[in-house]
Image (cartoon, rainbow, N blue to C red; front, side):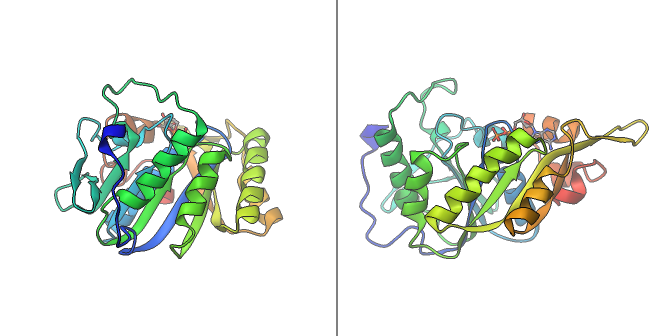
Length: 260
Ligand code: ADP
């Protein structure tokens, strides 16, 4: 990794990016990377050019979700060339997953080294022109988040989408994310409640496995927009496992209306 060195990009690599969205969650496993991935696919279907920056250094799952885990990043004069997910280059991705020798390698680094890599990711990836850059962050509010927000602050408009599951324990963690956004001056675009109910494929009855409504209540209470509920959907899990385009391939599934 270190042999890749620091590129000095005089002209910012983010100059051609129109909007930057940070995807945040209070805890792991609530579907943050899922939302980042599906958001990118939905924007692509809407005709937008999208980049994804995966700064979840200890759990980079997006390369696998987009089935590009075997690809490599290359270097050019202005930095790293991200991996293109499709032929027409409408989704590009940069992730530490591409820099690890083996996919199961663990990143066991202290904060300063992680922060340095995040800063390098933000300055040295040659995105070209993008309508949206989606930044998938690690769970919680750590040093890495502060580095990310500080490095991205000069580039506007910048905003955060917060992902929670409906239960009180996850909602409580998102409350801390809201405080983080307030303290760092990061605009909150809204809250998404993921894994919100399960619609039985046989009888169509909805069971609220993790309860329901916590995300919406929090949004109301905090005075930020509520962006919607995504149900628990086995076809979504399957499509992410297999690196398929959920919106294109599963239009009849229960999570489709929310994600499309
Ligand atoms: P995080 O990034 O918050 O750690 P992930 O996006 O990796 O979480 O999601 C954790 C797991 O849950 C993944 O296996 C993903 O496929 C699954 N998952 C996420 N959201 C849903 C959903 N709405 N329905 C079904 N499975 C989901």
